[in-house]
Length: 397
Image (cartoon, rainbow, N blue to C red):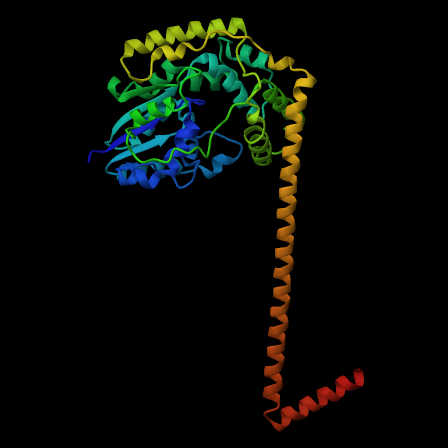
């Protein structure tokens, strides 16, 4: 079987979390069909991306040292098809791309880029910033990414992972066009399974008996929920460290609680920004059409939906914030109760462990004393010593 690598490098917010969850949970089935998804933990390819690009990430990067080289070595040793997938690979520099491709050996490399229209990606990226501790307003975020200089941290990151022609130029310039695959996210209102079918076709997973049940996703928030989370960030990011923020705020509040506000208005673009996004998208579509890449879906998907009613998340009133705020308080109370139960259980286990230790010590002490007494009783001199000791203890008592 020939060696082939499907290298999925982005973009964020294009169904990547779901894809990676399916691949991880079906590793054994994939192996049976000659496909390797090399990962022992759910974030292994994320760590590999951090390692490849030497990216700082709230201290997590210390866990990433050597992960890319380890992953690449597994791929080189596999004789079938290998899949590598993480969305932040999209920001790799040409030098980092060159290193990545070289480390995969003589395999036939296919580049996969999943893409979504800017009309939905722009608000999604702002929301991701908010879910990662940012309290930048939506207005300022839009102004920042539209700055032609693109020299801010937010602006440079956004375009590195969202400017589709540039990503493909960096990652795919050394590959034949037929080895570069675009998977477009279907328009709003499409069948829920359509995106997976496009992924499945591109990765050669059709007809495999895969479990497609979603366990890890990156759900979106509505307008009031995102506004509330941004307000929370203004209050807590200076007092809650990143290792605590992730489980409490991003997971418990954002993903497990606030994302369930399905009746809330969805984030959109103001009219002027919507028109700008559509113009830029048309330019990209023309460029991509000329390059002759393989497309799962349609390049027209990148135009995005028509403009709808815009609800400004920076102007959400207190009455709209109240329902998600109450949901957040309830969720945190439940989590606090759970943690108290865990704490009480750990205290009980510690008490039992200490009692067991004390019993063991007492047993050991008794055995040592019994052995000494038995030894002394075995000789006249020893018996005399024991009698003297007992008389002495009796006088002291």
